[in-house]
Image (cartoon, rainbow, N blue to C red; front, side):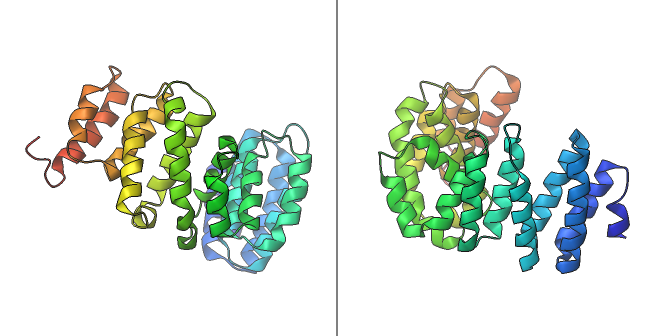
Length: 285
């Protein structure tokens, strides 16, 4: 049934079939997905791109070794100045889920033939494939490493943050503390870095935040409070969302005092403030 759906003219049906085959797993599913991937790549239109994204994600979820090989073949076909950064990002995330040190040479070759802006997530993936969690911590602590490179690593870790890698989080948080004075004043690499860090911590809050000592969580809270007023609205909204998990009841008043006029954005501030008021000790505020 899924095989037949994969041939359907309706894009949504093909997407559903690719997702289903990813859940089913196994070498047979990998073969069907790769065959369909070639067809969609040949089509090259917007609908095909949306199906390719789901197929790539599905291959990343299949544990059979043939899935990793299929992802590598997809990587080898990516080349030229018109490579879509979104395609590269989806592929880098899938390869991180199917990570193995042997992937690094192919990733490095791809970085050499894909334009630098589009290859950002592949550079992050390459570093993660090379370094141990402890070495990554030391790398993130180095103030000489450009913050945009650290953001490339965070983008890949958003897909999956293994428990062993949480040892590096305090170093990334320390870097955000150093960048916060810049990030609050201007849109750019500093604000983007802090935005990605907040996204990573929220996506993996169950084990990421639990792994952090109280003083590091206090640093996250302080950085988030600072960036609630960031020039970058995306960064500011991520900071507000972060306070839902690391904030204190008194932060409800702090958010309400900085509530924007736009009703859509104000609703984000209001929602987090209400959550903080309902937390222990917040009812009287």
